[in-house]
Length: 304
Image (cartoon, rainbow, N blue to C red):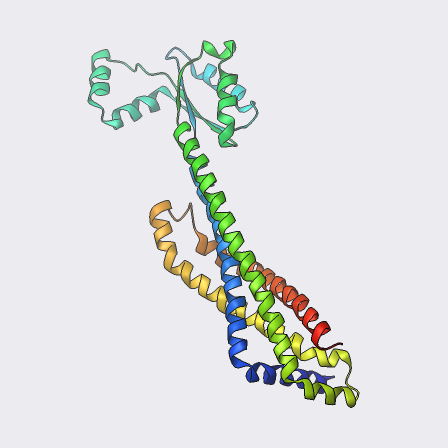
């Protein structure tokens, strides 16, 4: 068994060496498939991270009347927390609101506070929704009569960001489609290249295959070297293509960090943490695709 395995591996390496340029071209094409798959995943993950980052900044600030007591405000917090789609409600006391207004540095506000001589502000509530599209339904709910005696006004810190998210999502979908199309094209070319590589290998080794049949070699033994070739193509393509993509992320991540912040968009960390799963799945997918292509070539040109 060990001797037969060694022969199969040796035959596979000899075949790849005999057709070196075809081997390089096939490996490069499969490597481009790995790069395009990694790029598609990076775009998908990056878009999700950007959307989550923007959604964290969305909120609805409710300004309460100055006469609202802390007990009434806490009751209102409980009621709003019970609404559908509400994720979190943060209570800001009168004193905190006053301090925030002083720190804003607005001269008109500072003069008004000094003229009044007391805290003119009421407490406020910062409402965060589970989904960016849920804010309008929350606002409609808060416009009911039971809340009118407590809520003086509202500041919508989500409308501009919602517009950005909508435009960004539309753009991201177009990018996804383009990269997906490129991935499918590279996958198809990879399958054709593997098909052609196996066909050429069978043609160059046709005399050896005839001799092997005459001495009683099994079909599995004859097919074995081609399966080894496919394993090598897939493994090296994933290693080289994946390694190159990680290097590109190392070069590009500082720019993403500068623009979005490392806590918001960190593709490098995602790929490093999930490299085994990502590239293991790509290897299995490419290997299966290569086997299907090879079996078609073998069936057609080997008659085995």
